[in-house]
Amino acid sequence: AAAAIDYIRRSQAGLLPRLSHPRPSDSSDILGLDPATRASLDLLRTRDGETEHTLFAAVSRTVTAAGSRMLADWIAAPLTDPERIARRQAGWVWLLDKPGIRDDLRASLRAAPDMARALGRLSLGRGQPRDAVAIRLALGVAREIGTILNRHENLPPIMEQAVRHLDRAHDLQDLLGRALSENPPARMDDGGIIASGYDAELDTQRELRDGSRRVIAALQQEYATEFGIANLKIRHHAQLGYVIEVPAAAGARLRGREDLIMRQGTASASRFSTERLVSLDQQIAQAAENAGLRERHLFTQVVGRILDEAALPDMAAALSCIDIAQSCAVLAGGGTWCCPAVGTDTSFVIRAGRHPVVEAALPRNARFTPNDCDLEPDHRVMLLTGPNMAGKSTFLRQTALAVILAQAGLPVAAQSMRIGVVDRLFSRVGASDDLARGRSTFMVEMTETAAILNQAGPRSLVVVDEIGRGTSTLDGLAIAWAVLETLHSTLRCRAIFATHFHELAELADSMPRLSPHTMSVREWKGQVIFQHEVVPGSARRSWGVHVARLAGVPEPVVRRAGRLLSMLEKERGRQAPPLPLFEQAAADVPDAPSTPALPPAAMELITELDPDALSPRTALEMLYKLKKLLKP
Image 1 (cartoon, rainbow, N blue to C red):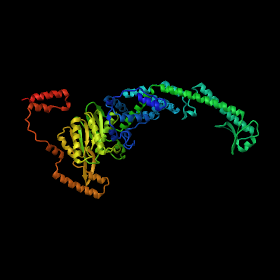
Image 2 (cartoon, one colour):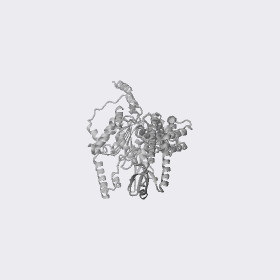
Image 3 (tube, rainbow, N blue to C red):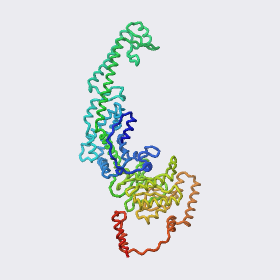
Image 4 (cartoon, rainbow, N blue to C red):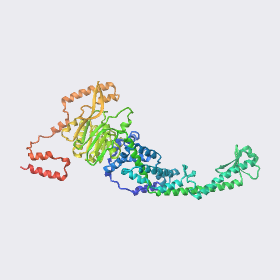
């Protein structure tokens, strides 16, 4: 923190912005999201750097810039504390059945300027008059919103806290109301920042300055009459000061007068001065300079008073929080978004979940097909097979996004949702290389897989797509098999494992918590119809040739590929077993000597054991019991 402050001080020429006290942050309070997961899910920006088709764009209904920034922070750093999550949810749930209050809050918030940005500029000495006016307007909006919410009893805690922060800084609001003019200029040099009546000395200097202008107007009329030149003007020149300006023809008649001093002649005009004009010019310049200096001094005092008000950062945060609450209430008000239940167990059930970004991009008359996701403890690993373009990647991402929204305290695009807190989320969906760093697509895939296997734990959620596709079939199948075993039996995390290695579905017999699912497909009149539904079971085909046709591959190539596929499938059916690695693994293991049957008591004890529920001490006690039962 000290190094950061030193950098700011040096880079800002000694000036420091308004800084809050450092606060300790525990990484366990925030859902762990590694860079690959953030890039995969397009939370705030897409891989192309765009902001349109992102999770933030799909859920934001905020009306203030500060509210949008806080919502982005919530999405980027979801929570792992169910109590804090419930506090956030309570704010927008309270507004769900109160459309009148929502509309009043939105109308008031639309007038709220960005208080935090204005404070930042003022604290660095870069503020302009309109930044101070922004603080005044924000204070007015805060008082107005506080009045709206104070009309109602039984506010949720997050709203009560916001109201307490909004109901402060009344003295500062009164000061700014008296000190600042109604419509100040954009720049300090333009003057007119401080309101009339606030400072007597400034009013005196302004009267002298503005009164002199009236004197100039009267003097112009006097000279026009005296010299008989109706279009005579008294103008202020940057180098010459106040001068009499007449057309060139009239100027020739005035050059002989002793009371006039010729200052400048051009082809179209002649400029003269008098001792009276010179004296008046000095008086006006002095009055204007004094007024400007006094106004700057007063504005500096006002800015200092603003920066001394400790309540402003909390007030800005409260306005942003209320903006997010109304945004969530508007989003969930249509009835198709739910308030998820987030607890401390390991449950995981989503009913009729949808992908919010894809749904937002659909045409108005199109409908997104919802899907359930059940990763309860007794079937916490879902093996998802099915054809390309059937929606596997969409299903993976929508599940991960639902967790992020739920633990950020926001509505979820689903009929209902109940999950135990996820401590780390890993999403490996979509292939990409990193050639600039010398990493191929497969190397990137394995690097990300390594990160998952080294960091995931029992409370993590892992969604992975096509592990092992960047190498040979047997290598890829072996890697996918080993990774799936590790997720299921070693890490014991909740996971969705999408793959085209359909043989892995056979592992359900040896992995009790593995649940095979597939994407539903129908054939009709020789065409393949993707139904985008996740159903129990496993696929036996990938329909890659059909997808090639959809992509525009020339028809002769598609037909040839179809014939080759049929030939290869027949050849494999004659020569190879369904899962060659199983057969190879069995062939490599020598025949083991037969073991005697276990005593009935030992068999009963083993049958009743639940390894996932055993503590280390209880497991040790069970081993002693088994050893005792197995003694001859």
